[in-house]
Image (cartoon, rainbow, N blue to C red; front, side):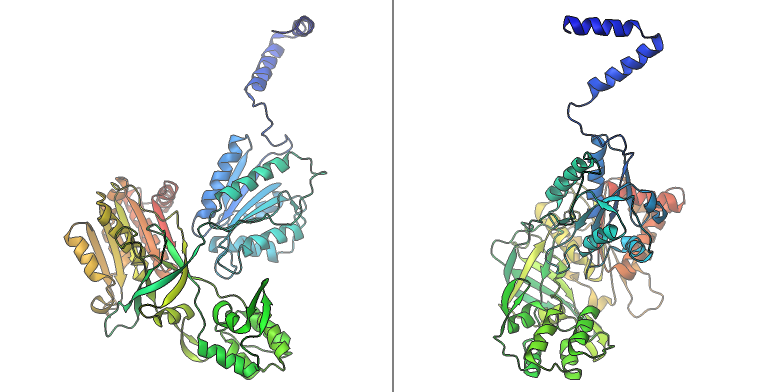
Length: 561
């Protein structure tokens, strides 16, 4: 009910309006009533925001999609774009631009975001109109945590952009921090630009609860390949108190450098092993740093450049190590060597898919490790972590952490799965099938696997055969080179079975792919697109759309490395 004065004023006002004006007022008042009491919208001067994501595993895409949905619920127009498809010519036209981006390996951008990353760093333009925010995803186990996000944030500032929220760096458990940051960013948009001052101080990132280190005991370390194989693949079993993981997860191992190598380095520099120095805010002995924390075998270019600057020499070498540099370009003093140490990078954890089921294998962590062998200036050498692991015997200790992979999970027990694992990519699928066997899952399981030789390289052969005989493994298709140039590849096997594979997917099956990105991963995904095209209208665009639909429904997951 209106008070008498208000009612009188309203009546007089209405009496002056035409029919068309009354209709307009009616719509206006309806809008006011329907609107929420709190102001959740961007000021009318803001037409839309763009949320662009760069992703390798899919986490950044999922998060960006969730944030876009949240913005739309608040009445904010949103354009969602993947950086691998984003038109770079649109960037100077953007007003509000949010970047959600992950970091790979040694601080590199995701493959799909590299073109965007290079564009903003090397084209010399300015973006004075840009109001931006950067949400960086990473893993605190890596020394260059969220490096790509840091680079993008700094470069936008350098190009003249105005930061509307401080850089947010997120660890593996990113949901809570990311959504809180986005809420604050939206709130900042309500503040007139002339009053908004956002510094470059990154939001504090909480260490993920899941980053707990375990001291595992080696139960088994055996070579899976037989005599005559051109490779070595180790099956290693670890036990640790209180360990928790799920099928589809991975573990991270920080390898140690060879003790003899460290002793050679210290003898060349005349530095006592117990010399204490401050590194990354912690006090450590030089011996501890060189053994457990610093990369001394395969130096990054920036470490070599730092070494050259420190000793005052011009050094043009690649794929070298600290010992070789010390032998060719000796340091002149203990102080100079300690300066060299400052330029060394930390040892990066090596990630391995877990090949065991927590139910079927009593919470033991099993991993499948291909011996990494490659050419350097000094001849053939082994990878740091594989050399470290192959030297471990029963009873030895290995320090590791669990890396959850929420996007690589088994579906409901009654759902079918298609699992494609060339080489050591088969590791997580041993976990999947063992888990389904232990739980009595009713969904069908179909394995595609490839390797070099049937007689020497058929990884976990007896287990796959046993599961096939007991019908836990419904179908299995194998591809082995066996020295033949024209052998049937795994991709060809997938195309041959394409009609039934598509029927499984139409029936609700999930499909998984794990293994090396190049060339196997790309070839297999190309084969899947060919299958989808043949099963639909023959068009590549339709096949791509079908694959995207599977991803959106979380029925296609890949873990490529």
